[in-house]
Amino acid sequence: MTQLLMQRDLSGQNTFGLPPCDNKFSTTLATTVAQTFTVPTVATRWLAVFSVEPGASVWFAHNATAELPGAAVDDKNSEQNPAAWIVKSGDTISAITNNTTAEIGVKFYAIS
Image (tube, rainbow, N blue to C red; front, side):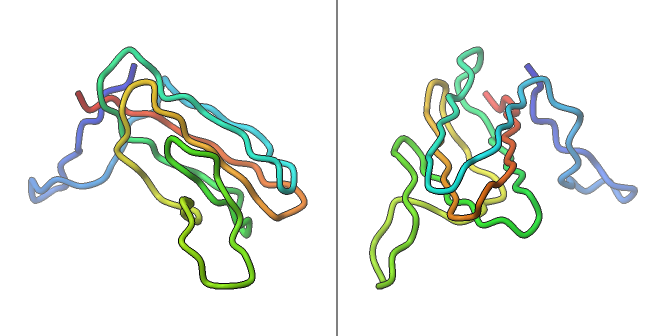
């Protein structure tokens, strides 16, 4: 388990520098097929840091199945290519793409 520890820059201010992670998962998504990650359970809260293949459009949902956007404005449960989320132990993260394929990864840093 890798703990989230903010790094200090030369002036002593906190910055977003992350150590290599012990809890990382990856997959290749096929078009319109949602896949799900489960948040590790060895800590209570985590920072989930997402990586998406450059140029790919991936939609992520928290504790729900990810949905692709439609042709009209609609209230969906999904977010496109997020950078990071605070999540809880045992939560699920679903991902879907309308690209032919998309490589994605999620790293989990323990925060409590």
